[in-house]
Length: 484
View 1 (cartoon, rainbow, N blue to C red):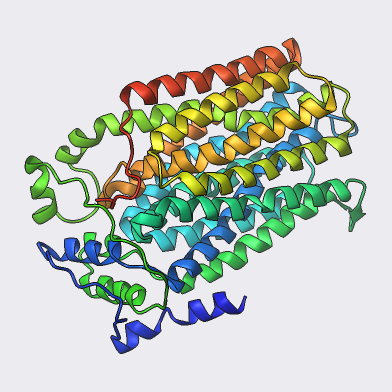
View 2 (view 1 turned 90 degrees about the vertical axis):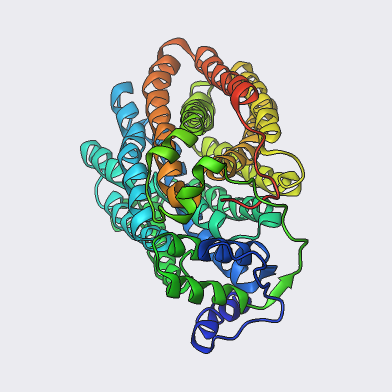
């Protein structure tokens, strides 16, 4: 806590004094002011301010992920007496948060490209705080479904907004590793929350059950992190895109004035901008789409939307349906919560392992390998009844999912330039939420009517399809390279 406090205390000082650290690079190729700012950011070493930003974002992401994971707990709670509901109601309850995200992700992404990454990150967390508190006050299914729908507006937007901001400000040589470490730290909140829920399964206070108290605590945490986000600087890249050069200079000097933690080799050169697109850099500055940009990035948009649509048929469906599957196989409710918690520890382990190699191999290769191993784990989980194999396959799936999801998010975020990065990633992320909704609507009835094997076969098939599309059509990625 002392380190984070010291790091955050450095944020305002350079802006007031104009002080530049001796390690701060000087741009050698100031073709435009935006290029100069981008080059200065890309050549920075890892600083205490970077670490402070990662810590704050990790806190927000942890509560966002826990809110999503509580959907799995709700699916278990409302699958057994005294709260058991029919399959259609359960599908609506679980899918509501993803339906809200279909609207929230592109809307907040569009707003972030116009009003700032930081401002919209704060708004997303405060909205999450309000909806989480509302989840705790009533048990009526219609109320819970409506609130989950509203919560999806922020839950769907926070991850792509966060990855966009971090891609803007982190050193390219360590960008992938740092985002994976952040994901690992954030994921730790899920098993801790589920284990607490398991321990308090029969606990009631003030007429509220354990799952209601957990929603209330999630809301409080999200509100606190939202206030902490006020302390971090806005993206200098984004500020230059909207013409706020003074604010961009102040924000850039804030990074340059922070204490150095690790000196790194300068990043590889960025991919040159095609000749026909250079007018976008020098004349048509600002945020938003243009005909040239739409033409240039159309294939990337289609690719990102496709892989995002396919991925939740496994990554979202597995944790949500593993609870009802375990119950159908005779596992008690309290033990089911324990199994779900162990699986999320696998996600944490996967993110840590992926951090070791994400900047050493191309993003596409890592995504394809994780997809194959996830498909294999899902098929094993579907057919096994022995507890050891159930636990092992669910932990294995969680481990490879912990690698797959953040690497895919980094890969997609790096596909787009600063001026449209938030809009593009959030809009394509909406297809992830569409896939999540359809997966739940389709797979919950399949699970109830036909058993685990057909449902988990569909999950594996979606992963194989994504592997094929990325292998054939996807670029290798931008490991260790600056972004536009």
